[in-house]
Image (spheres, rainbow, N blue to C red):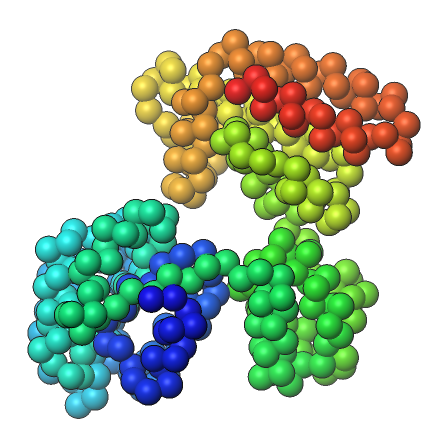
Amino acid sequence: MYQREFEKTLRTTLPRAILFFGENEYQIANYIQYYINTTNSAESMLSLYYDEYSFERAKAYLSQSSLFGGTNLLIVKHNKKIPKKELDILVELVGKNPNNFFLFHYQGSATNAKSLQSSFSPKKGANWVRLFEPNSKESIEILQRKAKNIGLEIEPYAIQHLLLVLNNNIALCANELNKLAILGTKVTSKDIDRLVYSTAPLATEQLLIELFEKKPVVQTITKLLELGEDEFSILRSTQFFLNQIFLFHAFMKLNGYVDSKAILGYKLPKAIEEKKANLALRVKSHTLLKMFEYLLEIELELKTTPAQNRELLLYGVFIRLQSYL
């Protein structure tokens, strides 16, 4: 089911086995917290995140009576699929005991989640919920409700500005609202600029990943420029990123495996390490050389181009870079 139908269901009942997936991590976290509060199971629940997941431990937990005479709430968060046989058994255990609840937050792609949905069939007393990324209007409404709940007075334009500064990340925006509430005064866009750290570096990383994945990049470039990044900083970040991809490419070609600490001198989070390794595997050495040479040429051209024409030139740079890939 989708969000509207799930919201309607929650008004009358609390489904006891749910698969959550999709792009709206913030709303999924809210639903999980709603379950914790509604079942009053903060002290008795079992949370198994990523490598903590153990089928035997999850099964044993749902097989026992609640230690506090209340509910057994099992929360599993993973970016990898759990075997269907294991999910079927866990959902079956939920069905056998009215005090059991099982929430599986799958953080992989929505496409991969399709194979998990059969384990959460309504016929088994379970269900799945897909949450899409909210549009601008929905994001503003979510943050306005958040501000009202914590007693924060904030200008509507300031919320829009906060979303821009934090690259439309609802979870980050909600955290910043909590911090801004400490001020005890009405918050304006000037307060946002003064107190909130921009996620422009994260948006730049997103842009460069999109570049190598041959996805449309115009919208992300526009967003970066709106965040205050200039053409030269974007170009420098592109050169730095390209250099990292080259180092990954060369290391894996020589050694047959990836190790970000050996490559960069520090260990990247596993997901980022794998992402850069995959990007490096897609590109050939002579292609990387062409891109390096082109960036050196364009750096000189950018420095001699009138300021009013640099933005247009930057869009052309990324279109040209993608043509090499």
